[in-house]
Length: 455
Image (cartoon, rainbow, N blue to C red; front, side):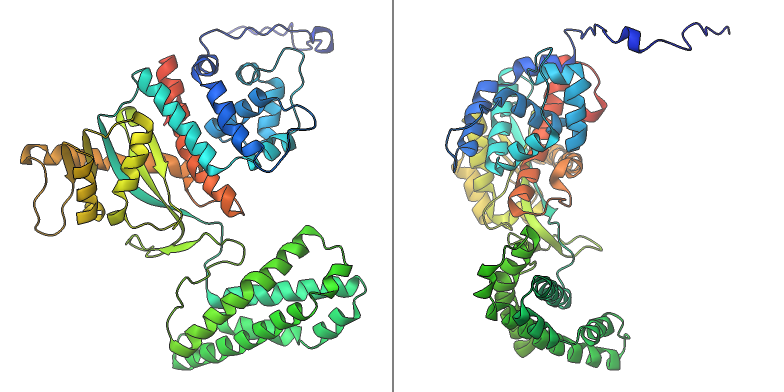
């Protein structure tokens, strides 16, 4: 093997003007020609100007929509998105950025994304599935249904931890006001023995697993509840004086949680202390309100805390997702809403449907009969009979199992444990996961090449 060292000291600065040739069959260029940009723009405008006036600098809607879709497909971070839109030519062409046009700072794309709702992401997905149906990549032949839980970005909702959080947030707020010159806050803070209270919480976590340890936990739990109530009352007593101070955003957030959420939570904890049972509609987090305790019967994970999503697998391994305002709709009550979502995409009911035992119920079977579905391949419970011929039972079981890999892909694309801190962004991430997978599959089918990230 010979070696060429003639370009070892390549004069970079003298050769900066470089012409880059992007082939016409690049998958991003092909994908950009099939995305219904005008329809996407009309959908997004509903969110962009819901509470705002059409004033100020004009928004380049194609650039922002393209950036949103690219980040949805590849799961780029905000700074990676900014970098790629500056120097990656296929991404620039996809977003409609002209040759000499400069893309925005990453914060501009964040602001745009934060103004979109989960319903908008769902509409984007429905619109894409309609295009995929026209092109023959998917269709209304069948749907395979399953459910999963998108876990919220919260710690395990133990009452003792939430009471500890209430106490610490109160100390932080009083301490900040005291440093700003509030003598009332200093006096209120002096009423608490901070070190002994922290030792009290610590003793709960390190109590021995014995009868004596259990009695200690009961005693500490009751004492922590009294201290938390005292802290909330202290914060409520200075609300009028807080108007004289300009609070930073994190202090405002803590104050809202201590005055809005904490009192109700402490009443629910008091209900548990008195009656030994969890109060109805139990609060599970100080910052996330749309969180439910969901039991899926998994080994080693009996309870999950978050929001339930229903996944429908379509021909070509495309998918759609659906959730509801109750966050934890039971599988046995869900098929009517899932089928309504299907009809919104294809304007007809599926010819065949499959699902596991959790979906076997009178209500679901009746919904399938009303929708006039020919093959109801839902696995029966107990000793009940299938609603299909025995020759097709194995086919239905195989089809239903194919939903699990789809759920695995969705989990990696945003349906897993959320990293978002607000309920709205958590919902958006969940709906965005299905759009991400479908865009990847659509790009693969259009370009007819092997794309590793297409799932």
